[in-house]
Length: 253
Length: 318
Image 1 (cartoon, each protein chain N blue to C red):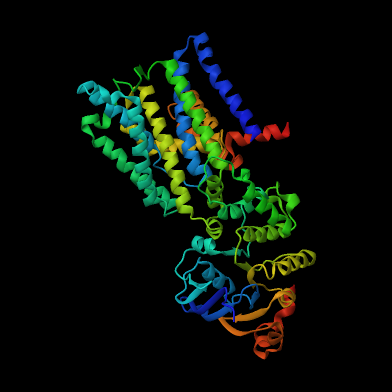
Image 2: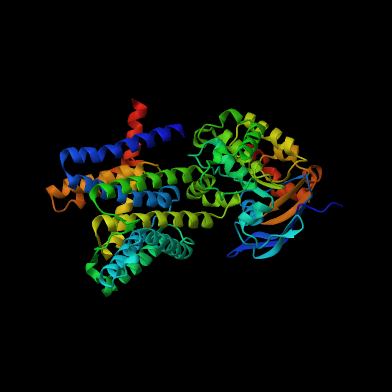
């Protein structure tokens, strides 16, 4: 068996009496897309925050490409090859679309210790950024201010930024949130085209998208993983039906 | 980029026009006022780097003006009273200003940049007042009263004195520091600095450590303000603890806000506006700070981009 890109062992995080993450273990093999579903408040975003180093877990281990990263700060994890996109769009609205992506692509092209030459004048980082922008369909928008983009385009930009740091593993926090049907379809086919190139951990409410994309699904409820398996296993699991799938109609609304 | 070069060309043109006008009007006071304005503006440029681009509001930035000033003052004191004339060497003094500014900026930055917002403000205020009180307590160097700079800085035998010379040096220094900050702000470093201002968590999630980037910005801003202090002491011929009082840091913040946060030419526009208001209003009333405050509130409420925002809005409409 291949070594997993990400493996999480017995992760715990409590906020007072609330177990936001309760003994979570999972393992993501290279090139696959692992989806995490669960009702609101199940602890999905808290889990991502710990994986990314924004929150320190109370106990447990996070191993990325064989290296224990549990104690590493966020920037160090990014340099090792992790990237995340945010549930709530969080870009620099006053930066151009290109500058937002450059911020990510310049990291692997020498970093920030450059003080005189304009950031946009580095051809390698720039062409890398443009490449990611065309992947997500924003190449013709590169000169616009990020704040002027539509909501759907901003979500695409988020993905381009995550891609531009050349990640081994992308953590995607509800990339379909707030998208119209057409935009959502576009995002699903984008993520589909990335499968095999980048390992992805996807948090998503949209069941149709999850079932179309995921190689493996874990269901989170009150901080615990109550089921884990292929799309078919999860569809059939009676616990999952009770905890979550009954509300599928709402999740689509 | 090209638009900015044009703006710089216009700026240099305007700066070159001042001395002939002063000569023609035979008004050295005007030239001296202009020099003071340019020197203060270069300190405002430094403040804009950390505040406008970095989002760090410091109530201690005048400390660096004080460092630059006291290097000149102390050197002058010993050169004049103890015959240590080698201390008047301007190059030597500039090296001292550079080294001290960097050291103090690293110290203040390491202590304060772990915090944000009001805590950063409080720590810089506290450290700033520490330096202020140290200057007040330095009885050998005039204590509270400060001291006159009898021996101006000398460069290859030429003393940094005379209205015209001071003006040209100040104009060159301002232009250079503005150009430096313009380049910095669009560099990779500047991109990360500005990104950390808008969204710190996001910046970390892109692989950058905002603390380090801010420490560099804080240090560069310290050095620029230190140079302004060096010029100020030679221009005014006088240094005193008032140079580094926290209210001077407050003035710098007001100038930057008036001019427009995070714009290359904003600090100069703000300093001109601030000094013009002070000059005009103090002729009318002793309580000139009150209308200045009212104007500042209006700027904050209605034109957050300050004078530069007004100018560019006019241009877009026209």
